[in-house]
Length: 136
Image (cartoon, rainbow, N blue to C red; front, side, top):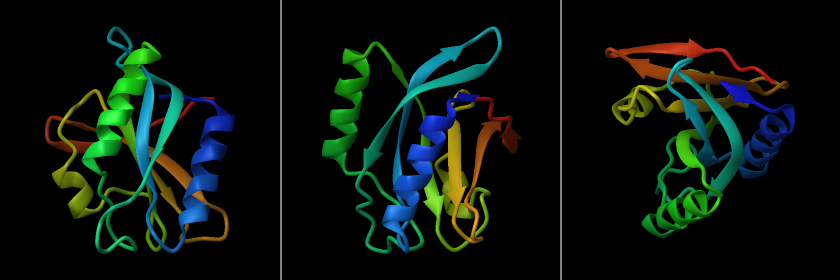
């Protein structure tokens, strides 16, 4: 995955601003089939509407529709999701894995467990989770 440092910093700042709750949003960009790689061009911050926001996240249908319209206007695709783990490591939880269903999607997780936030991206392929590298 290609993610500019400025976008990574924006995601981390958003995660910190939502602490102790999880933050969430979409990744807008382009998927390159020959390289099986996503290039992130924009992030779309969303409101976490889950009842238990410290441990889970949920998107509102209205914001999902707004994101879809905005991505199409920008000629970009929704190529992934980002969310934070304020109290655990940057690795998909069992709940996260339930909703990872597309092998081309990138799933960024920001951990705020340590003093220095950690940002990692994962993909789901052939019923397995693997970490994908993040390039600037």
